[in-house]
Length: 104
Image (cartoon, rainbow, N blue to C red; front, side, top):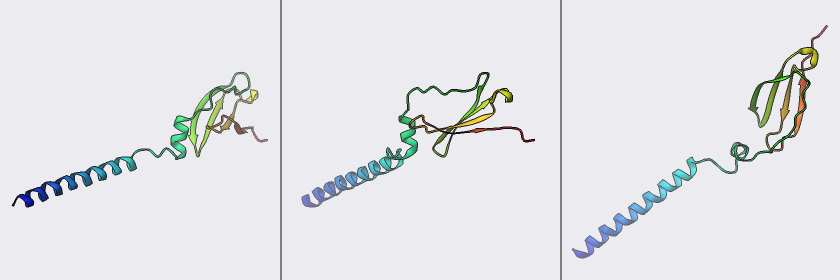
């Protein structure tokens, strides 16, 4: 009878340990993956950069899309303010500019 009590206690300890391992595994899998691009973008920055824009232009919108930072500038069209600037959010490098012009 004594051996049966010891066996029941040991089985209880083993079950508790297995449940603990399952809970820890679930928590680790639900948490953010340190290797994905989104978490690197959140933690890594490119510091400060100077982005030259034509005089009179304002920043109208900024959006992170497809791993690129898109800045939309607004202001007088004759100053060349109607443009979008694509930046690499990891390095701050300007990847391209799209300037809107009126067609004849």
